[in-house]
Image (cartoon, rainbow, N blue to C red; front, side):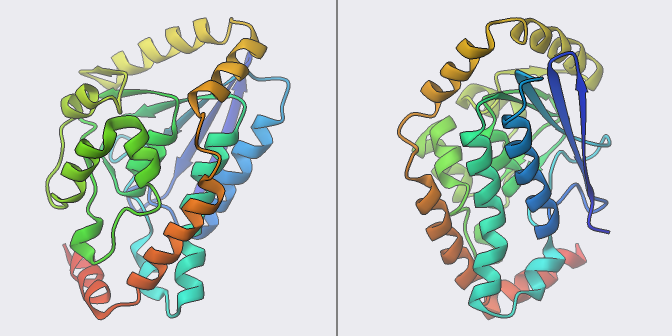
Length: 251
């Protein structure tokens, strides 16, 4: 199953929901759909706010599809796969609408990158985060600029160099990845709905101009993130990574 991307528009708020049976992970096809959806909604005059969420009550996002990573057989395929996350982050960055993240559960790797690319994030106390890439022989190269922009190089380094350790949602709140966290999903949704309703009532032009300000000095990311994708695309071909991915799949 490739997974699904669904969008619901209510009043002037668009809610994008993504789903994949493997922990809401992302194969290339789903990344392409998500990137296209941000571009489409960015061009719509009917909305001023976008909410990004995943379905279910388990993980928010398990990152890249392990099955697809294992299937990579050459540098071109590897670079192309990781460019999927690069394209999504750049689509979020350039989208003129403010993007509000809803993290109901844990996020790993690329899932952390998606949250970092949001402009404001609500989470639960269960929304722990982890960057496990080094443990499987690659690194969080593509998402690093987005994560560092949110939590700083020191915190990014701490996460990256402890690839098997979960960071609690309270840590993510303290470092700035999350703006608000709540004990339950119900409380999260109640406060998220109140916040986005208020935010969407503001001048759309002011919100769009604010989005530009928030993302100043990231204009080189169109090139930078694709360069980073090539690094990951090369490393995923190593024997170390292939063996590590197989081991992770057995867990």
